[in-house]
Length: 274
Image (cartoon, rainbow, N blue to C red):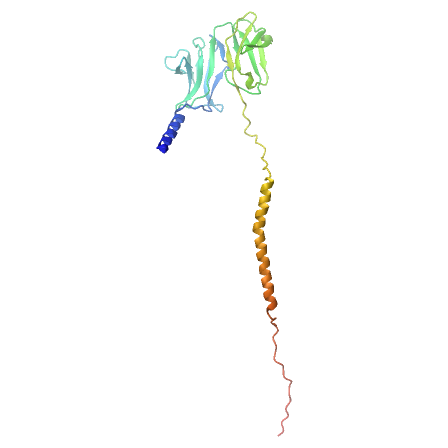
């Protein structure tokens, strides 16, 4: 009974793992790479890419308010399909989260794009940034030139930047958080989250070879004892055989290998008288 229950439990876990949506290596590309845009500004282009190339069989989708819709779907007023790109019309688009989905259910990471009607926006990357990189945040007014701006992360003021810029140098995971900005004459911008990803090591770099540790002393002594146990009987047997052979050789008479030849008789001259 326990075996049947365990098999059923394993089957259920496998079904859950197979049915759950999987995050794929395919990613969502966005141009311009901004989370905040002004309403009515130029269009935003989205596409699904795999290692820099267009990913076939993938669709850009928007999730908003628990609903999911394809980019460029029939009746959509804010988006259209142009070649392999999903083009957002910022005069009608109201924002949302976007991701790439394959026909088999694989998904990419989501990214957020918001359309603002405020007087100022914070230009912050929509895609995750890599650790160690430098990120420039811009506080951009809807009208007029950029001016001195104040930058805030998670309700903590980072400082002020001339010409509406603030540079985050050598970004780390600790720099993640909700950012916004304001100027002396503009109200705060919408908030957006900066996402930081750990830069993976280059595939060309290889770890140094691992030097095996020397065996502990106890193992060396044990190995020596084992060798002696095997070697000593062999030496004893060899010595015993040599001793037996030497003893046998001492009691056996020496056999001469010389061969005696019959003596050659002297020539005798016999004189016959007739």
